[in-house]
Length: 272
Ligand code: COA
Image 1 (spheres, rainbow, N blue to C red):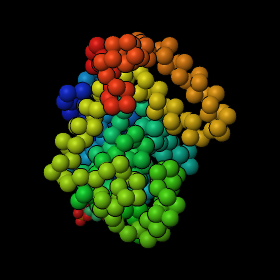
Image 2 (cartoon, rainbow, N blue to C red; image 1 turned 90 degrees about the vertical axis):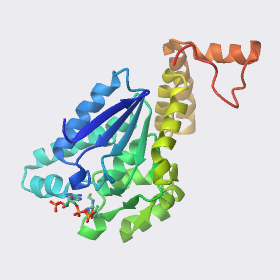
Image 3 (cartoon, protein in one colour; image 1 turned 45 degrees about the vertical axis):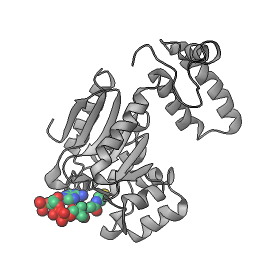
Image 4 (cartoon, rainbow, N blue to C red; image 1 turned 120 degrees about the vertical axis):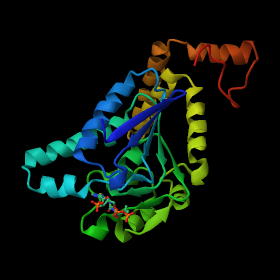
């Protein structure tokens, strides 16, 4: 794989879009390789948290205009749909429901189609110095793929419409204010802060973490009645599937052993 790369360190898989000379613009080849890599990492014991970032000075300059637009313009409707489906397989379907926690680490340029995987990650941290933009309007298209939908799930309509309609750039701090990312830190601290957040996630019960993110994503789309019923069942499912019996252990350590406060931190796990 040459357009994506992965480095493992202390439970974190640092996954980079890797075309730095093209500002990590997302090509069809990159989409193929990312689908394959994410599939491999699902069962790779070295990956407890997946961090998505970009090689060099860019997160990603969005979809590769040559590859995803000019080249596919000549393709049949079936072929065009196929490459867009391929991209959806990692950028949103894959990431939204990834069984392990995901963090987007936005290190630099982040435009257009790159906002989809950014939003689809569970959490996101940007460098203050990163430059974002919904640049589509500047070159005569709408934020398609699924960019409009993606940003509508995290940004206010006012902020999203401003970005969609002006195409103006903004930095990491502004991205955090608009809730496109959780927080923004100076670039020099970006990796350390991401590592710290990943460690927090790794201290939690992974079965329950997986169920919790699925529960949040699906219940957000349901009525209150449906959500209450679904969450009741989902909660039972996660208890049933949890090999470390975290719920019982958590209650035992708090109520009987009095060794920790759930309001202030995680119960002591035997492993992990
Ligand atoms: N698609 C295809 N190629 C891209 C690209 C994209 N989205 N973004 C950058 N590149 C290519 C450039 O064409 C250039 O290729 P070349 O070396 O063969 O000339 C190379 O990457 C380096 O980019 P360059 O524009 O020279 O870098 P820069 O530092 O001057 O500017 C950007 C960086 C990100 C501001 C600029 O590349 C840009 O505006 N990219 C398009 C961003 C965009 O609108 N993305 C939305 C797509 S949905």
